Amino acid sequence: MGEHVLRELFPDLDENQYQPAGIDLKLDRVFRLEGQGALLEGDDKRLPEYREVETESGVFELEPNVPYVLELAPELEVPEDTAALFLPRSTLLRSGVSVHTALGDPGFRGKIRVLAVNHHTAPYRVARGERVVQVVFLRAEDTGRYEGNYGR
Image 1 (cartoon, rainbow, N blue to C red):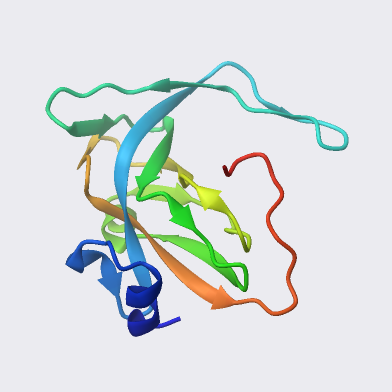
Image 2 (cartoon, rainbow, N blue to C red):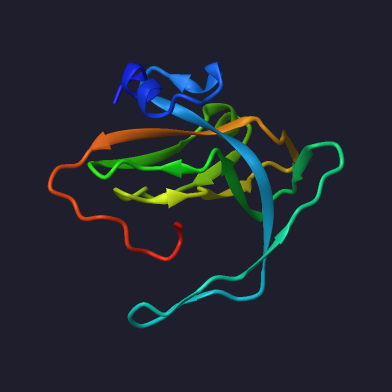
């Protein structure tokens, strides 16, 4: 979907969040993973604990080789005839920070969380409110609706 359609679907974004083929999502909160997670037989999923990283200045420091979960804003609602692909902004990649994402299924509604790892030898600083991920929407015909545990 292009910018003009996205402006109609998501009218309340900041002007700089609209891109020609997607919208940018902003960093809201950062979490460190603690404890063990598991994906076992069937639908037995156990996420590790998330510990929120606090910042007084609004700037987060991502230490090298530590996985972080980034929570993005705004909350997103994927239209029911659409799938969402989440892609890292190139500034992060050019700085050695990878962002790992998953597909946004039709009908998903909620906060988007992605995994980020700083592969550089020095800490990477990123401020709350910075655009870190672009979401691209693709029409998906004859789809089901998201019924998972991670949306609202």
